[in-house]
Image (cartoon, rainbow, N blue to C red):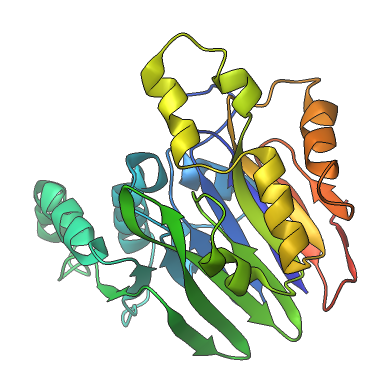
Length: 286
């Protein structure tokens, strides 16, 4: 079984009820954080997960809302891990990730210096192990495998999605993308697809062109559902709602997805959890 928790279901616009885009996936004894939007560690703490418990950080792309709390993840993991031989944090993302991580640590260089000067057991900066990828298998440990495939969020490029598999269960995390062959191939036959979505009918009604521009490079609810249908996935999990999903609107969003996908549809607030079992045997965690 793989457990998916929507840590943050928000967007670049701050929302009192939603953290920034981030998803937690637990497979076997391993815990993966996919993207790290604002407030991610507070949400993770609500389900008993700390930064020092992460097996790896997976980044779909380098838009600010998806990496806003990268520095918090790096520093908090460092100061909250008391093992004398703490391994580096694996960070897997598209080209450009290494530069972003390097500059984030540089921005925190004063903080890092203060802590090393004050604590005898902190003798080096946070350890990271960055891998930049666009396609292929990137992880294979203790019966958990992770494969990467290209997505389409241009002009943001390259962007990637992740497929996590464990004992026959599989989850694909699409990130921001329009429908594309890369995502179709990555998601083919998966137990679940976690997909960011927008309501184009609501966005098109807004008077600001810059906001309406987001329709150019995000999937609508209907398009995400069509992708799930083409790929033959068991569960469609919606997240990163634009505009924000308001209380009482859940049935509207679900109906839009259901018009193109006739299997299990999950959406909800931050901390919504879904269990994904091998094959098509999948059910909500509650």
